[in-house]
Image 1 (cartoon, one colour):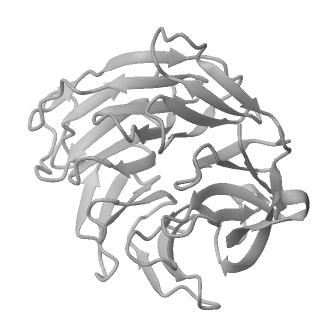
Image 2 (cartoon, rainbow, N blue to C red; image 1 turned 135 degrees about the vertical axis):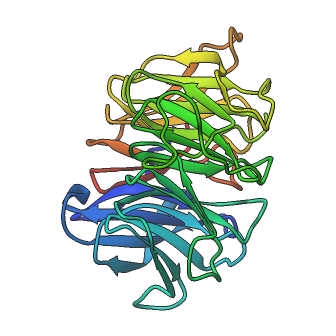
Length: 342
């Protein structure tokens, strides 16, 4: 097996990466100085180029400076050169990678760090953000303000993702140990014991999954099986949830845990289902590894397929190439972007 292609960004620890949905050789990378604790951030635009001996090398095309650390990013689904970033100062910015210098749009509504952004691949003029302020906001890039705010959790929302199958469904995960699914067609407020819609309103989820006794840091929708999600949490567990029995329109608690995948030695920071295989899942962890899993319960193959251990710090991002089957990228607090085939 060939060693990974590597790009280093000295002084800037990575937080997230994403492959372009338009170009099979283009990546974007979000990073922060001083591990995101204080200081500025950078958005890096990276290309895969042929190297000596037929090996792929990584080339830094350009970078953009931000005044605060960058925690996440997402490519536009409608404009090949546009990238969103989520920032520690509560802002969301839209960049055109063909221009230099400043962002082309900025939104400032979140009151704490924005920790995730996701562009809908069905309603391609819509994106979603989540924040440490407990809210999830839905946006359109041509509008100056958000078009909808969900009071999703009482605490930090680490990630919010549009369903790749149903344009009105958003899933979230939080410090409170739950996964939630929200239906944007019915953004009502939760009622019942423990809720107060006057002083502390909470949006009603169509499904709440008590996924972990610890913080749930990451989630992803399966690309082939609607209403199947994966979660990763501080308790080192990766879990697959089958939510196909949920009746949309009701507010339910539950979700069947289809499989649990132990193995990581520290918190699972990010995970992503393969865009080419329904049962292939990549996970990134604070144990400095990225692992590849076969998620078929009781399948003929062992669940753990591969361990990538080339990083020397927390692995915080992993992403499958949308075009090149089996090509995976990882990023880490060691300021290294790795691209490899497990």
